[in-house]
Length: 285
Figure 1 (cartoon, rainbow, N blue to C red):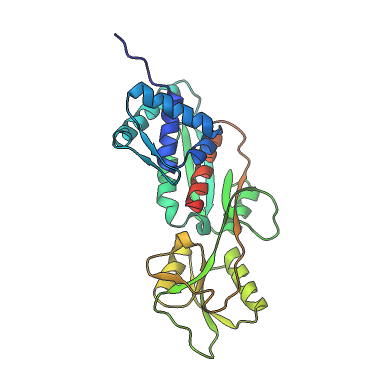
Figure 2: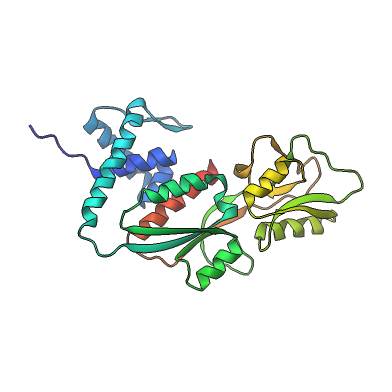
């Protein structure tokens, strides 16, 4: 007797929940409701005869059967997309800019997510400062940009609001009577400019002791004891601590992560929905 085929939408829902650790984020990625995602997962579990996802009020994780099924699920969806690609027109090209201050240590996982999208999509990724990427976007060199809030702009869709703090190495101590040593990214950098304005407004003398080419370089400088830096907690290496209260440094406002896009339809829009959900999940984790 022939087995009933699996519902591909249910399999996709399972993959999204597995990758995002959240029914809410999976629903955002699929542009549907959390209830619809839950129903698809339940139907898939009944069809397979095994629980795939263990749910509690505090977390979502794969069961042993879910772990075993995940790679097969990806292969199934990938094979389906490759079969459909035979009848599609030339590959759609999409170029996405991601701010270094937004991507951080989550970048490898984000790139991996991009590579599992529709095989008919030719995806290019550019990493840089929010200001530079938005200028390229305005010149129509980029189809979409995920950035921090940039001065002078009020466009873009807010994906998440992220907290920042003042961080330093665990054993670091400021020298009495000397300006506060600060590690920053190179210009143009909105976080750098904001941190300087906050310190100036608070009347705190400061000096740049390290200017790096990206967030990872700044985090390394802080870890090495070269000073303090305004960073998001998810950007931090081990051994770095929040010193804002101890040093009486000004509170840093939550900064939005924004999506700027002119993509309106097709596989590229599905890609952006999935990528946006991944950023929301990373920031709120």
